[in-house]
Image 1 (cartoon, rainbow, N blue to C red):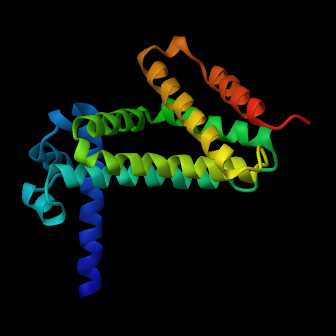
Image 2: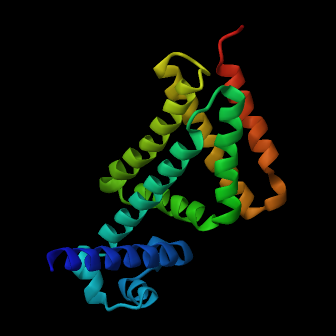
Length: 198
């Protein structure tokens, strides 16, 4: 009985997180409301408050799920990478396909960044989740043998993250301004420029 109740609660929580992602992507953090999210999920506001302390906790839980899903997808994509060129192709393809097929992810990341800037006490949570993204990229850069130094791999990961997020913003505002090929070229410059001379 306890197991069934736990499964039901998990399904409810997942449905609320799905609804939250949709509403926050459409209306932003400030514009979204608990009743809107409840309606989107087909549930009562009581269901939200039974699972989350309020809008802020729901938003942060939803963003944590978005970031973790991205990390899982990257890990799968980056498995068994043989060299820098293969890393470049998989790294960029994973992100450009996300931008083109799931633009709400980019909107949520932008909202997450704005949330951190507007709510400094909670900025640390956002910074930590974004640092997790960089750590994942850094591990892949090391595994592919682009560089052998962990500190340098972290700096490269920061540059790649910045380029990827900038690409996403430009692409969503003006699709013609930047192409997936341009991001491949940019990240290629970063990886090749960072690699030791042969």
